[in-house]
Amino acid sequence: KNEVEQSPQNLTAQEGEFITINCSYSVGISALHWLQQHPGGGIVSLFMLSSGKKKHGRLIATINIQEKHSSLHITASHPRDSAVYICAGIPSNYKLTFGKGTLLTVNP
Amino acid sequence: NAGVTQTPKFQVLKTGQSMTLQCAQDMNHNSMYWYRQDPGMGLRLIYYSASEGTTDKGEVPNGYNVSRLNKREFSLRLESAAPSQTSVYFCASLPGPNSNQPQHFGDGTRLSIL
Image (tube, rainbow over all chains, first blue to last red; front, top):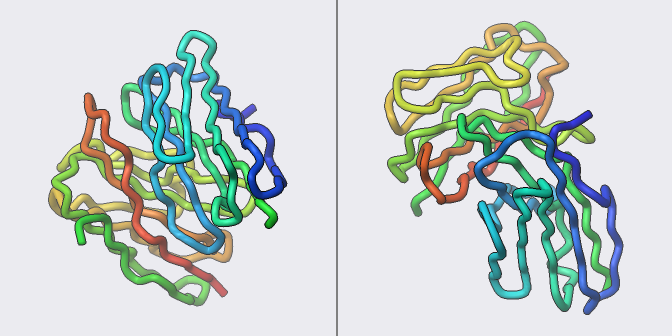
């Protein structure tokens, strides 16, 4: 069993819908990372958070350290949001553990 | 532009050949990482260097060696390439422990072993 689990693995939405991607982890971490990767593209950091909530534009990330759970929300989704979203747990030794990613497709 | 630079971007090798993937960062980060990304497997850590002068094995180190040449540069070497090493390789850096800054990734190296 992977130490970092993401759900769903695949998600298809219509433009404008509210999107939620979930990440659960079983390892002890000091922070969690949300990353975005467009098809054939590089990897971009969206958020790094250790508690509470962070917001950047239409993207919101939340984390509950006690429940070992984080969510990434996208409001008013757009086709350009189509990408793979990856969460990664950051333990104290900085040896990151990654989820397998969620493939999001937003149709116009 | 500041960031993580990987070279080459693409490479095709024959089985048994050797090569070194180069990575450099200009953000004065302490920690550097090498990952491979395969379909359905997600990102897997090959080796990492928590700070200059140290290197440690990750999840999938077999068939690879690394060198932390200085604070900026962290290279990954395939001594005798095998088809199973066909993958996309990413280098990344972090400021280091006790930092709240995100990890920065290079653009990746697409490596095919024939």
